Image (cartoon, rainbow, N blue to C red; front, top):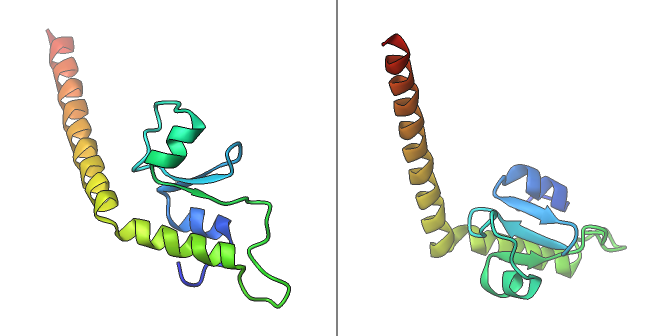
Length: 116
């Protein structure tokens, strides 16, 4: 993340982050419940969300990154290393494996039933 000069580069590099244009938020999709539509106040206070306006330039006039963008990058890095994020990633991976097992089983059962 150290070489990233724009929010789009960060969003491309780290697929777990997405940008919400309506709320002007960067959201960690691993740590935030995507199925639920939560009120904006609760979403900002409880889950992994980071305020940043995509229309603001990440660069200052001198060519250096703006303080707001540097803070965003630091907060995103800290979040990626946090224990809660690492735990959610592991839970998500386990759920994906379980779903794949279930899906394979369902296909196998369907084939067997189709042979009868």
